[in-house]
Image 1 (spheres, rainbow, N blue to C red):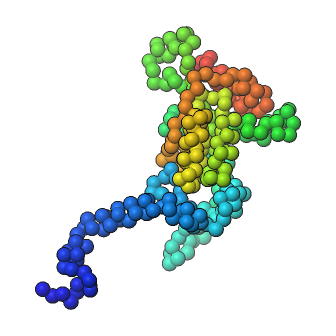
Image 2: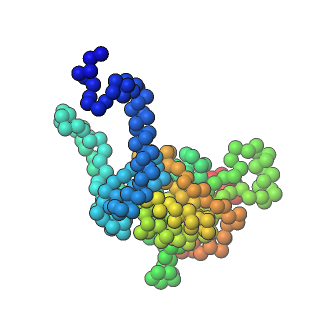
Image 3: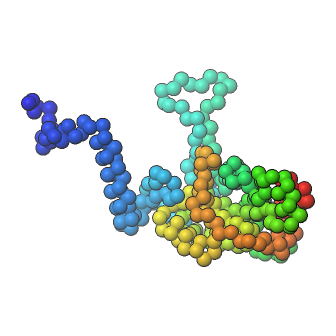
Length: 291
């Protein structure tokens, strides 16, 4: 046997094993398992090592910023821009009139239509944007803090049922609709997890379902904290996929409240034009069955 091509310290058996097509997959799985097992220790030793949560595969990155600074930079638009249609360096320059590289900055407002698309496509919930800037502020400065959700939704519980059954439900005055409420954030980590969760608790108190939605959850301790809060308050979690909203997912299903708090709905409708229009749609549904 010719051993000239066998690396020093590597037997022919090892070489044969490495030439096995399954070897690389097994090695990759082993590396992933070791990274997963050691990640908590590494992150305690190196706080600059951060990781995403609620998405697979988990992504790792290094940051010298504090978690508070990361949230502030994301919300202020100081994060690196998001690039689309970036051509390779050796590509032929675009001809006149053709679209070249586009650069966009994310904002929280960019997430609202993505969330509405996900809700309607995957859960049959008709979403509506609530703009808090359209509020009257009748209670003065701070009177409306954490009062209005970013997005609300209406779900037809009789959708797909036989028309006779739908009519029977309406005549019996049984429940025909579920109302949803959503607080949306670009980034949630340990620095703002409790604050954002209680913001969702506050502005979703009137609805059957309340959710805290984020494009990015960072850190395993973040989701752990949010799940502890969920056990007490029942606000669910949604991870929003910015590239493909339909691939967004409910990480923790909200705990349903059987009754809508109509007095709070009245307060919101009195204070905000968007919420008043949403209540008009709810009334129209009760009257006609059309959403």
